[in-house]
Image (cartoon, rainbow, N blue to C red):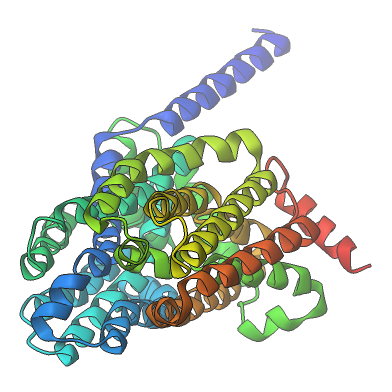
Length: 470
């Protein structure tokens, strides 16, 4: 056999092995599908909890005699609990594992729903809601991380998106059945996805990347083999995980103080700014108390909730399609522009109503404004800040940056959710005029500061942000 024949045989062997590896990476096994389903049961819990405070408001206030202040505390304290959970989520997920963190979170979620279901005063309502919020804070971090770590790279984005999709499903379900089910029974229904996740977690593997990080190489390979299939060649992927974890251990550890260096200033301003815009636009308050807004505008809250439930899932899918067609920056501008317009429509609607003008049109304007605002928010501003945040921060500060940005998001979400009912009582038209102003400022901020990150390497993005300072 000649040297050239040996060379051709070697090339053919390498090509065959590469093709086999590509086939293995493209396989979507039943274990991956089932593991993703189990993890997004927690996302479904998140959606149920977010929708509960809106549909249960009238029943809880009437049965327990709560004031506006007391119910505002109940509705908003979930975001405060989420803020606490988010702060510790990264550390807990690394210490207890991804599966262990989901189990740990469901302890608080189950306790929270039971406390709400059997509460006889505002104190137990708040304790239950705070406990559920803490669980949601943990789940909001660990679920997308777990899914990203177990799925093949060519479907990772679509599978992670299932997290957002299931949140919308939980929200829609509670918007629908909340009109027909007593608030105590509704809280008990919230236990079903929690219990389902607790049981099914026994049957899914731990993240192979986390096992590799812990130095448990044998278990890492076993988990990866189970996820990719018994006949799959996992040697290349397992070696890549091992090499990556070695580099991670040898690299510098991320600290929050590192973010205040001048070179990270544009990334921090963009990341935190988008999160503040997401919350200060009034989105959290409208989600938690949408029934109050409908009632204030004279539109039946039960019908309004049903309309929102119908559009909730399609609009989540629409966002996924548009982000690939339009890009991050144009979709953010379009989303914020829509929120700006519909906030102004709601402001005018409530203004006319306060002067006794256009009384017959105010309910219609209210419905259009609420549905339009939530739809505009969902297709862009609802999810894009999290995607952009993951793209603009370099690896050495990504953990610290994620903590800071998540803390900013949940903190301002709590402030807005708590103040929302008070603002509606004060002046509904003025409230949405404030949100209109914030959204308008957001358009200027996005246009001036936020780069387009679609189709660009992380190095290219970093270079453009560095040039911005010069």
